[in-house]
Length: 386
Image (cartoon, rainbow, N blue to C red; front, side, top):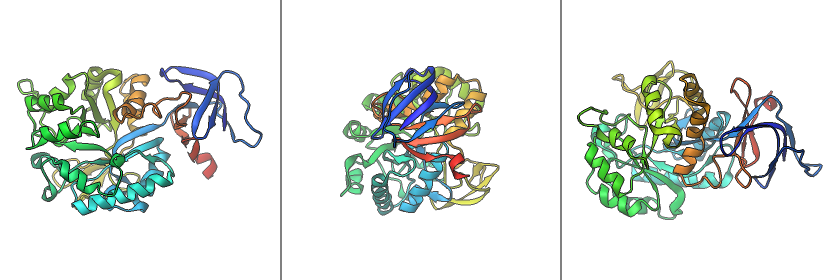
């Protein structure tokens, strides 16, 4: 495949104009100023007037289009994948809830099958948001299935599956057994501080033990206080900790988003959607983890004004950050290479450079998504649909 007249964001996140790119076997084979030759029967695209960026990566998404990861169904993952592709997301972590262990196994089975199909946005590993969460900070999660951290639990649900089918495990560091669990699992999985009532000091100890990521910072945590900084203080303070943020303007106040991005800088912020099955759907009532969530004007509410997931997507959040004055480079890195680094897959994706997967998005001058490729395969193009 050859892309001609390409203005692209390169590996250093600088804009290179009027370039040519070739793709071979799903990977970028060349980027150059001159026209590169390809076999006569190869696909060619003229990207004049468009800007090519790395594909977005969503590390935390439950569902979309009426489907949810916790359905444990191949059809549900397919719907979510197709929807995400239309939003410029080229890879994602389907995320569970606090659900019965047997349901977790069904999720893993569907994800294992879906990974072999590689249609639409691709699965880069299942994320377990539960069962190792604080009952005090569970929100809409079902506390009937809460458990203390246990490596035996992980081994049990993974029986018959490859270890790397799970990518991220959320954990409240104050729970009994957390320290032991972190020490045992830190080399195999991304361990993320989540749904926690942890104090600053307890969270600091967990970070020292090997926890290096934060799940939707500020949400489902004790607040950042001037006497007791809580988990947010510990997570923001440590230069080796990356932090997810839901950047829809509802989950974190826009003023705080700007402050946090200035603290995290270019390399530590990770934009996630935390979208539930109502994403891409009209307002109404939707199931989330066995509870009814009301959606009005895109805002989720499970009965008492508290948020329950979102209906946003990475592309919308990216545009929101730009409106807030976050520099393009910082916002784009938070949606692409930073999540790739969290997952330790930056050698394959996250930037546009030779040797990496051709996971890429073409935006028009208004930053609308016009084309999306996953491993060099065109998975979304509204022009071709019409």
